[in-house]
Image (tube, rainbow, N blue to C red; front, side):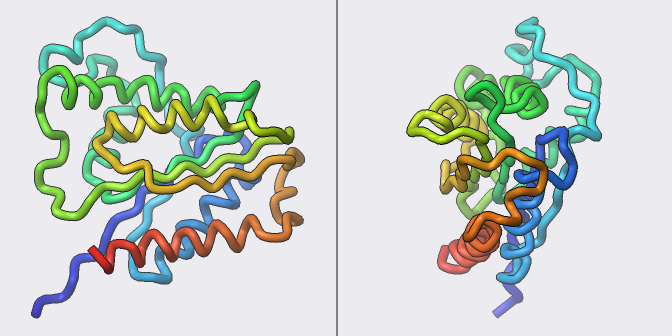
Length: 201
């Protein structure tokens, strides 16, 4: 039998605070995924110039975005990965602005799938999976409620299963996640679990 192809995990860290809480969590997640054989790639979203969606409806023609910015580099990465991990802090009960720009500009994928009925990734044999990692400073049952609804439809637009969350509340100061009793270990274990889930496919 031939060697089994490695899965590819794309981690997008959207926080503008480098080495902050969500950034540290996604690093641990990707480390865990690599331990179980995955190939990983990390993108620091604040390094990319992404303009907002203008709702021009150009994407309804062929399923492509007319805006020429750094999203043109990210589109093929999102399209071809087996698993997408999006990490975002919670600002005013929602994603940070950098994450929301990315999500809105993926309208082109929703159009491809739901309007033009063009499968985005017909060459994928394995299921595509999406994971959301987030940290909020406050406590409560609704801290992540809005963001989770957004992620449900975001992953749906990418033809991905919304596979898991890692949501940590009550952490605010930069890198304070290091003092959390389980968060970094939980992220690492979730990455291992994700990679292992593909070995069972």
